[in-house]
Amino acid sequence: MTDSLFARIDAARDDLIALTQALVRLPTLNPPGRHYREICELLQQRLAPSGFTCELIRAEGAPGDSDRYPRWNVIARREGTRPGQCVHFNSHIDVVEVGNGWTRDPFGAELDGDRIYGRGTCDMKGGLAASIIAAECFIAEYPEYVGAIEISGTADEETGGYGGVAHLAQLGYFSPDRVQHVIIPEPLNKDRICLGHRGAWWAEIETRGEIAHGSMPFLGDCAVRHMGAVMQAFEDRLFPALTTRETAMPVTPEAARQSTLNINSVHGGEPELEDFTGLPAPNVPDSCRMVIDRRFLVEEAYDEVRGEVIALLDDLKARRPRFDYAIRDINRIDPSMTAQDAPVVTTVAEAIADVLGQAPDYVASPGSYDQKHIDRIGRLQNCIAYGPGVLELAHKPDEWVGVTDMLDSAKVMGRTLEKLLLP
Ligand SMILES: [Zn+2]
Image (cartoon, rainbow, N blue to C red; front, side):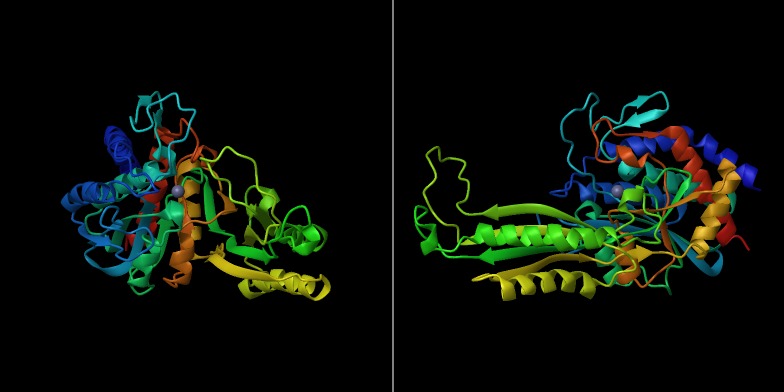
């Protein structure tokens, strides 16, 4: 049975290339979020002839949504002959900015040998195309399948997913009574299963002082020096503590298997004015702001992560004269980790063994992706990222996806559907 499905997928090679090219040639840049409606319509036109019912859903009021840049999503569902389990393939439709250093047309989708070049080929229109080919070939091969197949194209993954998967999850599209297995075809390499990702807490800390003439700093209170004390406390106490916290998550690269903190920015004193060429005025700065990006582990609780930094700031406030601070939360992403014995994991692992003749590697992502919303809002814990493409090429110049890798991943996805949706 399987050989016949694999042959069908191999025969769809030209179709897979053309579909990937059509997707890449729509420059769905985010920010600001261009051509979302067009790509959703393209997916609808593609999927409707195979019997999918398609809904186009705009995340009205979500961050970034406007009449100029509406946040459109498409969700397509095809029922089998009898009720059963639903397998959902979720891909984000947005791509990041092009950047410098390209030698290929970023939206030309040029085919050169086994590679298709362009922004979004790897991350992740190649994965989206592979999942569509897998589903279409499976449906053609087994029109009598049981359960349902869903394919979604969602907005804004690159900027947090609030106008995409988070919105759909809030509407109930990822609730466990509707969907039982979710595969996100992000570019994790065709022989790896990504179980989840670390969490993140972004916050802005502000230290406050008092403005005075810079020739008499003793008449004021320097907010930048207070921030220096915060950074010293981070160096002395926080960073050493973070490196001791190791996770059982198989995060790749391995150096990210611990808690980390990045100081994203520090701004203090007079603003830099682009159109001003004179000298700075002598002032003691009365405000300094620092944005921190704290990545945390599935073993850590959000309240503890936040509380640890606040305790450090409160300690400074108790010990350091005139020290005062404010803190503002910017973003919270909870970690997500699907169990290695979850059904979608074991099924895809068997499918990888069938197609590639090897056991998969299990990984977790140092950054995050849309699994967080499926887990925390949708309450569905049977979700992985699996798809073609070399992770290190994502967001780089001359990004590409391999046609053979897409075909192999499509076979893994097709084999997964055989295992889950055939009686
Ligand atoms: Zn991606």
